[in-house]
Amino acid sequence: MEDPLDDLLALPQHQSEVVHSDDKFQVHLDVSNYRPEELSVKMVAVVVRGKQEKKDGHSWVSREFNRRYSLPPDVDSQALTSTLTPQGVLTLEAPKMEPPGDQAVEQMAVEDKSGDQ
Image 1: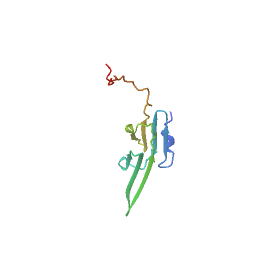
Image 2: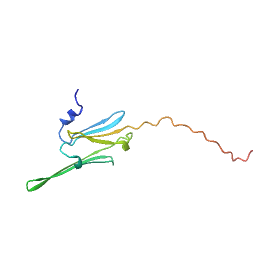
Image 3: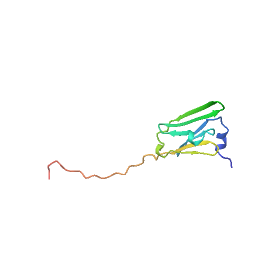
């Protein structure tokens, strides 16, 4: 059986795939050149940032990327999770919220203030 992430691993660095299905919102992002401590995910929209600095002989080499994803309004942003595979693919995933169904109707007593008794 073929791993669905194999196709993503063949993409150029920092390519991403966004899945917006009936039950979830998901992002796969190739971050294979970054260590987990060099990555951050922020919830304004969804912002993924990678920053790396390395000493290269007598100088420093620095690289950085930022990716911003807008969350669809029907996604439960509080349930967003992120996982990093050994191949360096960061997956962000959040379930869709249940559409508002029929609300339970609560019966209320009507207070009579008309003075008629």
